[in-house]
Image 1 (cartoon, rainbow, N blue to C red):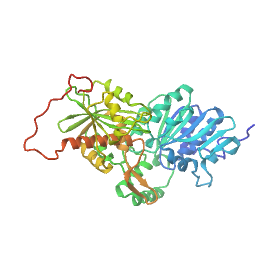
Image 2: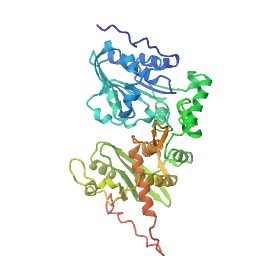
Image 3: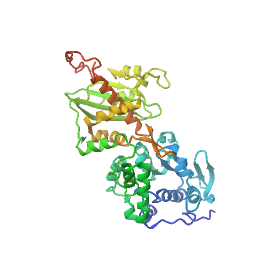
Image 4: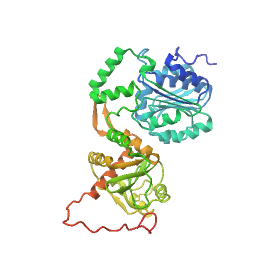
Length: 449
């Protein structure tokens, strides 16, 4: 018989943590806590996972945005007040049967398991059906993870806890706004003003440190995110965040319906292990209407061709990346040949180009765009989220993008920008413009001719 009290090691919810803790103890299944830095979000989640694992046998996950950051953020994280690892405090040895350090995995004495995983590789964990999932730093996580796991937790009666600080007006805000009025959900925003966790002097010192570290504008935005829990603060290092915010303020993100009189141009990012993303656009003068966005993971090229054919669009051109000339895994056939055999044509493959050049092209294209919010919401969130990687040792942003869930959407948009720019810009302008050729596919089927 196990003789240990849970939560272990005398852990008790702080006063401002009690509403969430009471909700969970009373059987709540869906919680969303937006809270400031050092609120204790992961501590609450770890202790709840320990209680759940010993009460209901099943698999439990603590999911970080990326698997590569999971060890530092959770598995090896130390409580500065006690000097002990947080997982050792939440999961005492009395309830453990096996601990696998290399897999960040714990099996408990009753058969339940707990593991630290990443939202960037949840597909690889399909065989281990979870009964409870913590989505830690949800604002930075791949939103597809919840779409995939939600039916599983609904079927087995499992729970989900979303914990995060804001990172701009991305999927975390959209999801919070939608769920805060949903019956059965617990949703709360806990800013430092609400919790009183720090003194005014401590907060003033923290603001000064952030400004010194990131600069005046980015430091102030970081403080607003981390302590005021503001969704409106800019994302540090974002390539397109300010432009996307301006488009939203100008009403250029909203309802952008398909115009049957205009042909469509698509731009693809073809993933191997990552997602494949397709932006679908129409041009009306200088304006680019972004009317749809298709994304998938683990699907064959035929699935994407079918997605295009089932839509009512007429396609003028498909823009693919340079690596479309590479062979498809398993077949060895070039992906460009497979796509053309599936009817994806005319298909134009871009030459290899620098990422910086593509980002510059995207920055020039975005102010000319209108986005359909309903069909492109995930892609809009990704463009806002796409940002530079951070060099923690030198406390500076690197001159290269961070690779996360937003990268595939941003790469596809970069190819769109380069493709449209290079098509529009004449290399050797002729004295007279060429005669305008009629669109060659109005009656030739879904792909034109």
